Image (cartoon, rainbow, N blue to C red; front, top):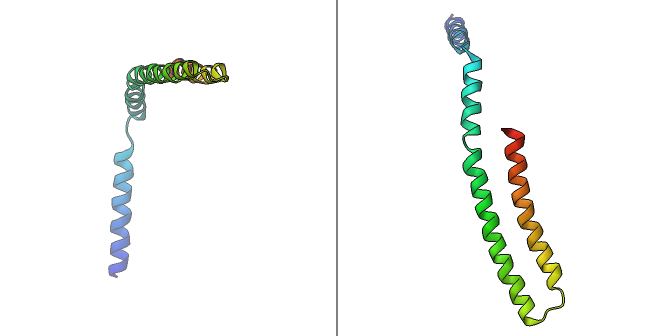
Length: 99
């Protein structure tokens, strides 16, 4: 007898929880979208700042190789420059894709 009461009570609690969960889903989706899109502007600025730091580090490394007379200076410069361009383009594309 107590098992029947327990299962009946559990079924009633789950039905009540399901009924209370029925709400305005559109408002929740809109709020979540606004929260996610609010992070894109600071995120792109952070990626641009990281790109600037990577560019400065790359410039110092390329200058060091150039000063020492290393023959593969152009290869190193191209790889660091490519990394900076990738960061900038990736941030711009992500921002334009999601906003």
